[in-house]
Image (cartoon, rainbow, N blue to C red; front, side):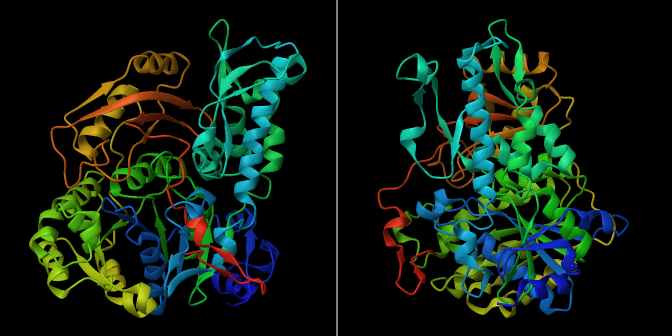
Length: 544
């Protein structure tokens, strides 16, 4: 690894604009954006994917590799990525720093506590939780109805036992008993606020607008009413600064924020992306899971809040995922099956269509694995050629920058010279119910949306309180275009069921929970944590 001061210098960041967190990590001051305010933005490349398998399809690895390859071609490039959550790291997916010869470093630090951002977000979230219960305990001057408090607690770990809890037990000195629960930190509204804030002032404004519940008379109560938002901002003073690290070739990478894309909005911070756009000719960023989840939220939520637009979308596809969508069992994905690949291409087709719905051109990146055969790869390329979709095979995991040169050249050639034509999927003036239906029918391919009892009433309350013009963040399974994780390929004629609607007034969106999605996931039968080891010399193994 290069010293981070050298990485900063190569990116055009001065030493007085960073705070060092050891030799290989740094925080970047927001004053950088003031200095570069008059510099025109570079091109923004969004990396998304098809509907993944449970092991993931290497989207982060491809994002890192693409930035390496563009840099090796002589372009000024910065990658902007999300921070890993400890939940997946110790759960099923493992780390989120890329892999092979396309990783970001120091990957162990990044996968564990990094520069403390997740801890700060968790602390700010739980400070508000504590203030709410303390307010009720000491007389409840605001008249908060304990049965209508919507603000829960947060922890950055998969712990299903904390999904629903009862607090305040133990007598009068221990508080007022009420039902509550925990969400995982990537699903916290504080995480979304950090990622969508444009500066410190915007951060404090958004924190103050968090709605924590309702009074006995039905009025909304916000964090500002509890005089808590300024203290929460103090806890986020350092966390709001984007983090600077490097890839395998010493190229600069900005890693900041980590909301999940299945239960949150799935994009890294606006501040980090704006820094990348000002510093580089090409900024490569990724949005979580498939184009139906992270990419839709990137385009309908993040781009609106950030005031920028991507020039191109890269859709990562793999042979194994296409075979899964072609009907192959998960246990048989490594065996050659060209017919299944061809059958699964309907999933890729839908994700390409999803990007064109935003007037965004798409390039397909075929992320090659060792078990893929030439015939399987050619089946994908032949389809893309016949559909006039630019496509390239990438092997950045095994070959680093060299393995992504074809993709990098394809991306540069495909980016339009004019300003992006991107437009959001829906207008903000549409009723929330109509926005949900538009996402479900146009992006997922649903026939209709069914709203569980109470959801329509909640949406009407949000509109009456002045929140009718907010975008929608749908919580949905990542394993299917539908809300049924077992519905592979390109499901048709299905119904999406919205079972709950939550207001995230500070973040600036309404969350629609579909199917069985939980904002506190659980660990698998054999968690990744069981294979990890800290050795006597301080080295770590098993943290993939």
